[in-house]
Amino acid sequence: MILLRNERALLRQWWRAIALATVSGLLIAPPASAQWKDWDYDLDQEKKSWEELQTKLPPYPKPENLLKFDMGANVPNSYFVDSASVSVGDDGVVRYTLMIKAGGGATNVSFEGIRCESREVKIYAFGRPTGEWSRARDPQWRRIEVREINNHHNTLHLEHFCPSRKWAAPVTQIIQTLKYGPPRRPD
Image 1 (tube, rainbow, N blue to C red):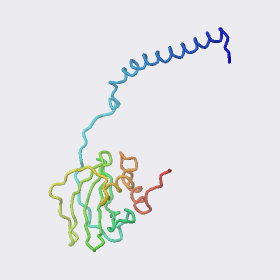
Image 2: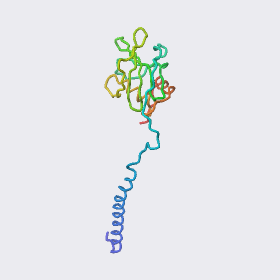
Image 3: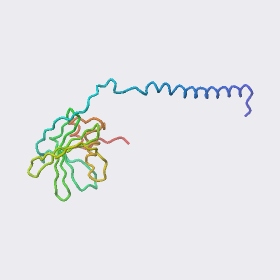
Image 4: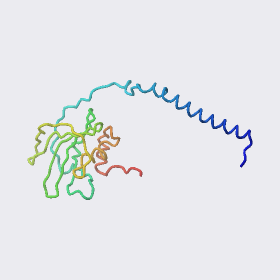
């Protein structure tokens, strides 16, 4: 196709205008973004350091209050949360009693807390076969890691306690997801 001189001139002007607009945009973008680089999102938010609430040990779990949660088909242990012990404190910690029944018959009971915001777990006490609690020697918050086996803390965090990944669900919602499983996410 043969273009006339006027058409070629118009085409050149059009390309120059596009190039000029692109270069102008690139020159304007850094100063415009620079004005926001020091902007503090939390400026209007009242900053408070996180403080953990004092924890009171719950009653020892009763079999009728145990809710089994799914850990997958290839897991030999059974995992339960005592529904009567589940609470969400003003500090944002979900506290609960966990019972793990091993395939060989051993049972482990612990009273724990999960912080949704920081993805951490803390074990406050261990259950004794006599139905009493023994406080943990040095309870510390530790990061919840994704593991091949014994991934129950990660499952509780992601699927039951902290659906938003940052804030704890209400106790009623936690109990519902433990009873009926977490809601299905769209693919």
